Image (cartoon, rainbow, N blue to C red; front, top):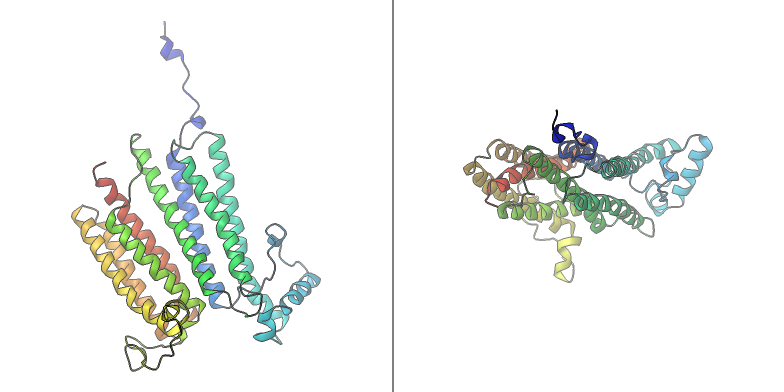
Length: 352
């Protein structure tokens, strides 16, 4: 006679935690956020961000479908400061070109929101989320919603008097996108570790990685300032800015601290040389990781920071050529990914 334990059916797999499935989904979401960052860069560099002058979270997902719709959208744009002060006389065909990138950027945002919220609800319904991870996934969902609101807050800054989005708001928008990107990857790596070992706990960020990511976040902020102020056009030479390391004739704003955010020449100068501090911090983390046996990710990180610096120099020397500048922004996200890929296994090796 079979024992009671043998006769008891196993719990349905749908009701068991599924860390690997959730991790793979989060990595897919990170790939979509990366695509969003790249399209956002194209939108900024093609001056397309102010082409849609209304925020319609639901109905705005449907593009103009006929000539009447296009004319209505164009008329709304013609009432904006950007059309009146910058693009007066623009044709409908030209408007459609800039509308495309902003529409695609917003459509991707909506798609990412649905691609996160619907599977999250399904995993929760199936009780597939491991203990301790529900709040982390909920925070990611809230950050995604906040990112959409910040996106409109950014666009709205260019629809009042000056046809330029606030570079401060642009920096907030980009930095939050990359924070979400990093958190998606880190959480996915925690879940993959949990799949391999049911007793594994979330990994803590190593101190060297925390310093590196802080410097990298600061560099990304100044990169957003450069983009928002069109500071990349100020000097297209390297390593010097023209004939000097720092142009002595630079007009300075008052109070002096304002120059760190609002002076295009100062902002470009800081962005140039802060890159070397980021590179140095990458080499420090790589050395620690190498000694800890985390070698392949460390090499990828070093390769990524070198490529990123080369792309930054190329962006200057080409006069902010679109493809190069977009590659530079996308590479920033990939550099973050390599830092996370290095820091996570290194943190996992530390004693609990």
